[in-house]
Image 1 (cartoon, rainbow, N blue to C red):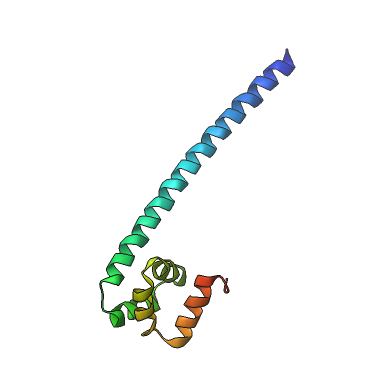
Image 2: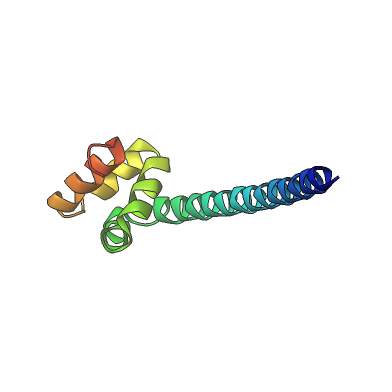
Length: 102
C-alpha cells in the first residue's frame, strides 16, 4: 500500500514536470519566433537605408545581432553595407557569420 502511494506521488510529480517542460518549451518557441520576426524587421529597415548609414549602426550594435541581420539580407545589400564597415570589424563579422569565430 505504501509503495502504491509512492508510485502515485512519483507519477503525479512526473506529470507536473512534463507539463512544466511543455510550458517552458512553448514559451521558448514563442520567444524564438518573436526574436526572428524582430530580426526580419531590422533586415528590412537596414536594407532600405543608405549603406553608409546602415554600416554605422551595424558597427555599433551587438555582434550577434549584426551577424543575424547581415545573414538574412540579400548578398548585394550586405556587401554594400560591409564596404562601409571598418575592415577589422567587417572581417570579424564575416568570420562570426561563417562560424570561424565563437
